[in-house]
Structures are given as C-alpha cells and as structure tokens.
Image 1 (cartoon, rainbow, N blue to C red):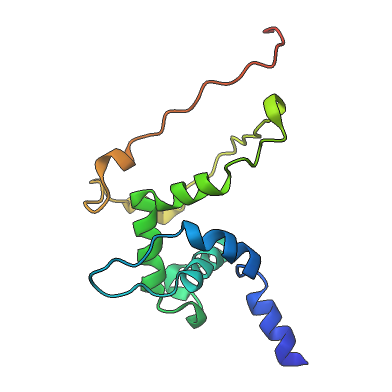
Image 2: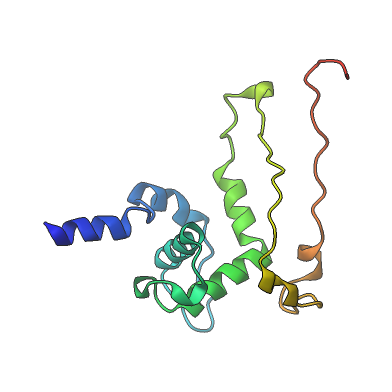
Length: 149
C-alpha cells in the first residue's frame, strides 16, 4: 500500500493519457538524420515538473532522464517557437463559446530578480534567431462600449 501512495504522489502531476493523446500529434517528429530524440512525454513531464517545483535543471529527478536532455529540448523549443505553436494549436476554439464577451485577466505584479541575476549575459544567444528575441507587439485593447472616465 505504501509504494502505491508514493507512486501516486510522484506521478500525479504528469501528463494523463487523455492529455498526452491530445498533445502528441502536435509535437515535432524525429528528424530523418541523426540520433532519435528521447521520449517526448518523459521530457515534457520533466519540463512540467521543473516549472511546478521551481528547482534547478540539475535537480530534476532521474525518472525524467538526463537533466541536460530536458533542458536542451525546452531551450530548443522555446527558441524555435515550438512551444508557441503547440499552445496556439491547443487553444484553437477554446474561447468560441465566449464570443465577444471573452476577456483576459492581466496581473501587473512586479517580480524582482534574484541577487545572482546581475551577472546575466549581455550578448544575445547565438543559437536562437534574432527575430525570436524581439519584443512582441501587443494587440490593442477591445472597448467594452463604456465611456472614458
């Protein structure tokens, strides 16, 4: 009984089979040349664990594979727009029922950098295209029909 509880506690935040079935077709396929990628599901569960736990990459549990593999996949997909493309495909039609009343809540909380953040690099990373590093233009707010105060 104890091992079942431990297993449930360890895997309860991993992708469910239903979530994986929806996500898998949206992921990039292995290239025809070179080494095949490590299992996408395991790597994505590693990224989700790190995001949720806030731990350093090197502290990822072994069940997600080598931390460097998880880090490199996350970095590559962040740099080439894969994560954005996946998110765009997942949210297609999600707000269809909301119609014009759809809204987003934006929080402008200030998040201070850690004291060790002062040593950040000054040059942009060479392996990410410059256009991916440009600031994103935000859309104009949609009026609610009310007057200005």
